[in-house]
Image 1: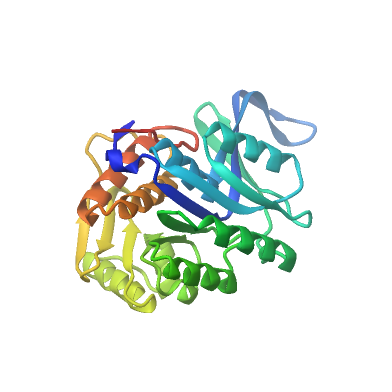
Image 2: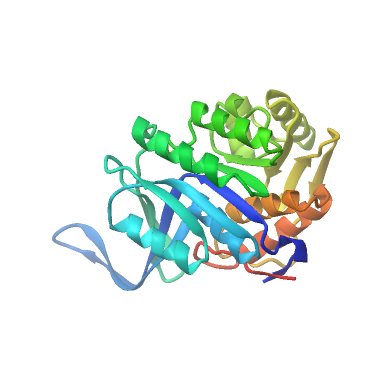
Length: 313
């Protein structure tokens, strides 16, 4: 649990993007099956948590905000399980069903506390025209009365360029801050967003270069900002915390709190995005937002599973 500003309470954050469910299977015993030449695990526990954009929404809710999550799912059991997980997390949601796609699922199998394999069920094709029109109409309506918009792009086909431009135009007309968390290598359609967040490897993929020195990282975030028309940029950087470019065009580095316990980094980036969205929505200064985001991420990485970090004010 982290201390958050009382202003977070009730702030309505609309989270649009790649809805998914993170599932884990725990095994305390495994053996090699001689006849089938397979590793057999004996499962004793299965859990499901909101993942991807859904995890950002769950974190917004846990931190005190009012989360509204919109995305696309399949017409399957995983969609039903995701909806139930979102309800348990206190997240309002509108998930458009597209029967031609599976619900995005990441299944991790653990032996003890160690993950041994991950199985992904997904489609990375752009969503169909009908689903896209339905989702866009719902998103445009959901922005009324919102404090901020988050676009979460895990490259699963939801956050397309035309869809993004329509949402950005609507957000601009409402003077809403827009926070983008993207794994895309082509980011031009996010031009005009308030803040763009990605990790070091994702920025390397965008710029097609290796960021091996601090000066190079600073140059990189400035280059990203230029592509986006002057947006603030946050680069998450593992144990080195975050490097961010503020609205004045200055680079700063913030470091994580000491004495962190790292159990799993799964979902920590989503936690950072949720804090950034709430912090910008209430007008926090970037140094304070970055510090709070790193403290929240430290809570997230102490858990083996995808976690929504709780806040208290």
